[in-house]
Length: 245
View 1 (cartoon, rainbow, N blue to C red):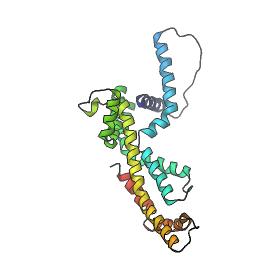
View 2 (cartoon, helix red, strand yellow):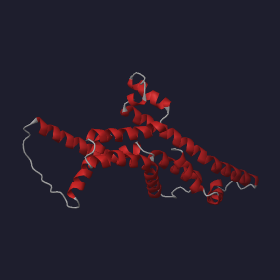
View 3 (cartoon, rainbow, N blue to C red):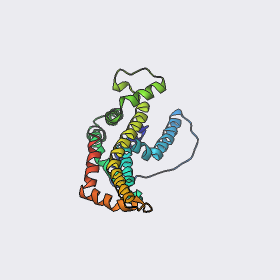
View 4 (cartoon, rainbow, N blue to C red):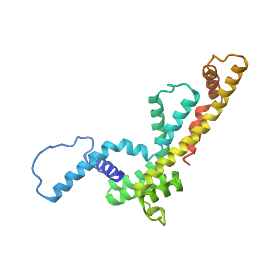
């Protein structure tokens, strides 16, 4: 699926490189299809438009975005600020962190696939092959063997002898559930210090006989002070980025 997306990117870049900054002419016409080549071209265009409409979801599911946004959401829930930071800020921060984490992969694709293809040094097949291998290498690094074995068994396939024999349609869901497990594990570790603080505040309120006062209301300022004093954002973001190492 992402082969078609990469192909569209390569073709679009090649057209703009040849045309400069001028807008290419666009002509729309309707008529009958007379040859198999025309039918194949129509089907390719329909498939390309379909993939482009799903491109955001595809890119999110095959990058570090999923783990990042889940951990930041856990952090907000652990602090107890409810709507701070807002969803737009969490999504934006996750997006830019994804760009930062995935930069080595994308730089490699640009240097070894896109640039040589635009300079007519390699073919489309070679460019797509390198792009696929680079993305698969990143996903393999973050995918647990148990999750990969699960989908291989569910598909009824024989155990592959090497990574190159693993189909991409099995690697993607295995990568996704591995990312979910890792994100929830990190989220649990984020929760622990704030949970301990909530329990201490609740115990103090019980000892003082202030059972009608919600512990969250009292513990929130202390959690904010603790998070600021330990430079929580640096710790969380640093640990999150290093988890992809």
